[in-house]
Length: 113
Image 1: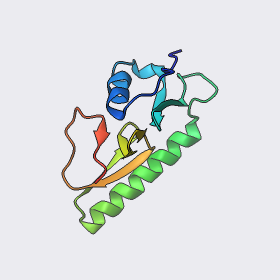
Image 2: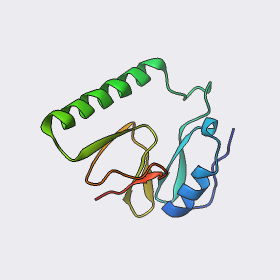
Image 3: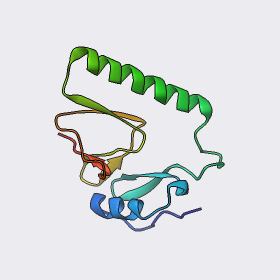
Image 4: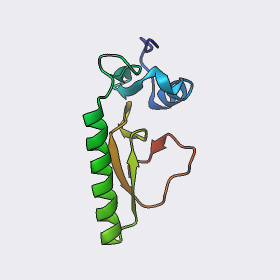
């Protein structure tokens, strides 16, 4: 198991740290500069259960279809896109809708416009 850093980090430092981790390390967020464990490694008590996967998939599908029907210039990101709320708060929601230009394939963060 990866131990989160004990020192406060900026959002940019957090993104660099998170990118260096193996995917199976779990999921982390940054809140006021402190690294928070969102989900531990697969198989741990706080790992996501199958019902959660189904709900995330349904939310993605519903939002994607609604955006498409409305013809909006928006996109849906599922589980993995980070968004900076303010200062050193960086979260990774299960499903995220953003509008405007589509983000590049290799970014970790969706701009909060």
